Length: 93
Image (tube, rainbow, N blue to C red; front, side, top):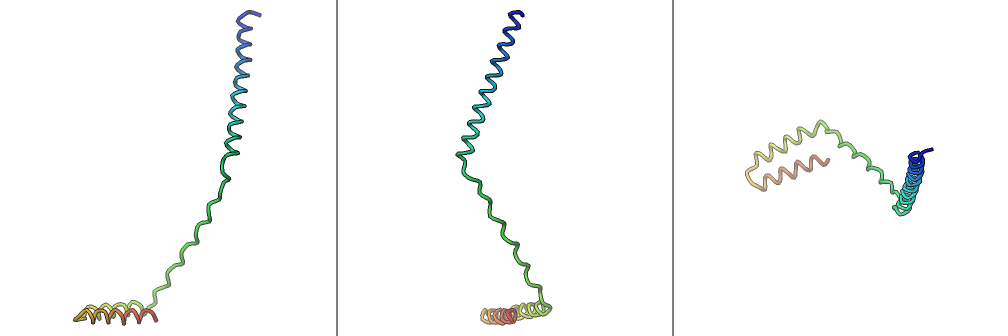
């Protein structure tokens, strides 16, 4: 065996040992980081979807149109507010 072969074999052995030592240090650091990390917390479940609005009743549109006409025909702020109040009262029934 020549000097070059001996040198190559020694270099390969040292390289393997260095690689193993570096990998050991990486594994130890990763284990330490995992141990120091806070425990995983599951996010809360998403809220349920909102309920759909109630269906528009057939009487709603004519009542709304009548209230709008009353407000349009009003001659004073008092008349507008009266029309608005009566229209709202009809909608709440």
